[in-house]
Image 1: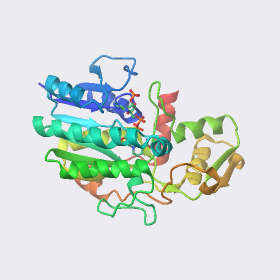
Image 2 (image 1 turned 180 degrees about the vertical axis):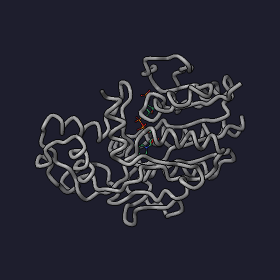
Image 3 (image 1 turned 60 degrees about the horizontal axis):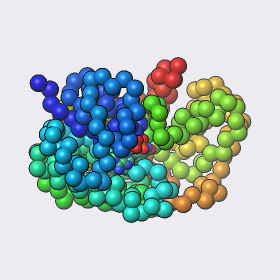
Length: 298
Ligand SMILES: NC(=O)c1ccc[n+]([C@@H]2O[C@H](COP(=O)([O-])OP(=O)(O)OC[C@H]3O[C@@H](n4cnc5c(N)ncnc54)[C@H](OP(=O)(O)O)[C@@H]3O)[C@@H](O)[C@H]2O)c1
């Protein structure tokens, strides 16, 4: 019989991709805060689960005894994390403690998702061992979540990623690629920052990285982003080229004009050598990702 995988945050972008990818091969227990947003609910079990509720986490573990747990659930709105620090701590840090404790108890392997926002963006691209220095509360919370795992006795892998993009059903949060695609196709004027550099990550690539961790029983920290590093401005320009839209409508702006609550790192990006070598991770290029997205949206 195939083994059981528990996914938290299964309504999110990564969560939905994981359910579709893993249900073909494993017993998938998908959990998220609200009711299930995936319309075809065959081939997996869905249970509502608030990961800040320690008792409910214990009940789910006791019921399903998962061999692997993939924790994608998080408070991901970076500016909201500045305003609601306690809630951010509850979801992004304390809950990781509850989950890792159950993983210890049931000998489950925990795969946890972290972010480039643990770095200050002064020296990107980063390798796994570079020193963290988060600029935002969100970044700090994810860095603290990594420390929770470092101190825990469960088997764990941390996959760090950068700007996830892709499409899924009824997503609560838009992503920049979907937003820019619509604006470009509608011929709207776009103001895009040119002073922050990232490696956008196709959600399917990160889901595949989680799968590779399971297949290889991998332990440790892995950089798992897209492979192309570009400014956000360049990203939207490349999208305009891909969709053959008018680039003159894209205006360069500085991030200082946005007055965002949370500070963002200027230049991140990851060196992917470790995940390529140890996991066999093979991310798509940005244009290959856009191509796949286009097929899904049409
Ligand atoms: N998105 C990015 O650009 C990015 C970049 C770097 C790292 N990451 C990390 O990658 C992971 C996945 O990101 P994503 O973009 O797929 O996230 P997402 O689309 O925002 O989904 C997160 C999911 O977490 C669930 N959730 C929130 N609070 C919860 C709680 N208390 N209990 C249970 N579930 C809860 C929500 O479920 P409901 O919908 O049911 O409310 C939501 O669907 C996160 O850990 C994030 O920190 C993301």
